[in-house]
Length: 74
Image (cartoon, rainbow, N blue to C red):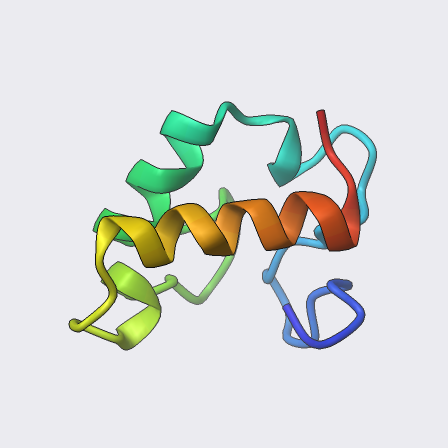
């Protein structure tokens, strides 16, 4: 998503979008991060755990908190 959260590659969601990804519940975001996710129409998929198999549930919770604090949502 890049440091600005705007989505630096085609199909990568903008985390600043008022009706975007961060309107999802924490549980849904955690599922997307854990299992990987492909946005509708995107040629790219986010790999499970963002490509870091060592990411644990505490790390994922911290990522969600950071995204909400930094880019907004709910």
